[in-house]
Image (cartoon, rainbow over all chains, first blue to last red):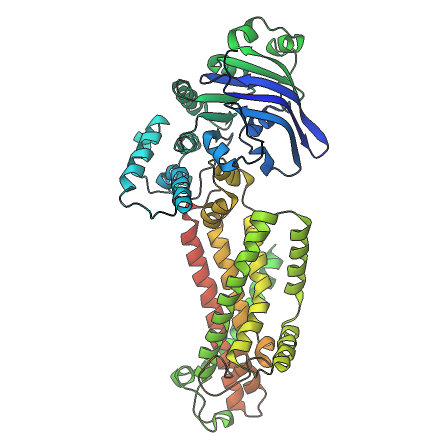
Length: 264
Length: 268
């Protein structure tokens, strides 16, 4: 791989005494879609969650090693974790709207970040930025492909949307803080095929601007989406590289067996 | 199943029935709008307005005080300490506090009052009742918040929100109905408690004057009137009990309505 946007160096993760990731050193190039594949319980989601430090919200987790984003270690001293998570967005397997209206869900991220900025600078809140927020909400709902369905009921509770719509709302919500990368943890696993297809199309459209990392155990999905592939097996990194190379001429036997459907 | 329902429903109907049957005949407008006049406790004219107003002051003040003290505790338990040993210790202490009989709170409040030379008063009653309500509010809120799915926390944290922002903007909204229920449950417990205010708030035939003067309450109005030898006064005790029951019922109905309205945005 050429340049790297997010890369890990000797990353180890333990849940209490159990080691979930072993010495992972991998490079994720900027933009495009990188798929992390492998059987269940091989550490795919753990690796993903370590990239925006969401992992440390889980009890009993210990992390060693480095995760570099643009050559800065996000586990280094003095790093603001909220800034990391603002730059690296996330889409969860099951859509979880926030307990508020559709509009407020998308506006949630921009609002808290602006509020914090004002608190830090001590300057009064500028008036009349409601329009800016309105535009941002509309824009991100459009990018997520949800705008036409909800434009007449932005104030109604997000919980009333269908699961597929909720996942697109979560996508809009994640994009609203304008992240440079988006981590997707089995983003279509709770969705029907049509909704799943829409999410995939949305990700395809986004990959020109945003680095997208998708965890999936659906091989066909990885083949459809991925520009780069990372194959994991029992907490170890087995193989990583351009999708064509990993899918067509895997170097490792474990990758070959998994892709052939013999294991996993 | 049917047996269980009948037992519960039967007890409720029996208690309500008794209070209504014995109390309703003695209940009239004077009871609700007048304070006791001379000879009231011999069966002459007057009412229990002093106790009704006093009870609202006591329970209202205690609930506000208890909520003010509870919120930082709940925030600490849920946002910063969650499952640490220190938090579990705090939870154990709160559970024990919940189990302490209210007469013990009353006696404790009385000793403190004696020590600092304070007399039975509205303020002392409010503080004692607040101590009684505190564990109900803290535990109620704590358990409601503990039920919030982890994925909802993570959804907010993943957007770059801090734990505090997540707590205030997401978790409070998600649990609003349960938080309100905890507060109103505590209010109901406070307004119905006789033992905690027996020594601390005292009793008076006048309407509450200041924070430092004694104040009447409905449970004690029932208690004192029931202890007299005059049937007419005992009837009024049931009337006071009826008023108290209606207030508690109204609170529980109102809380249900409000809780329903607040569930609009809750994610399931």
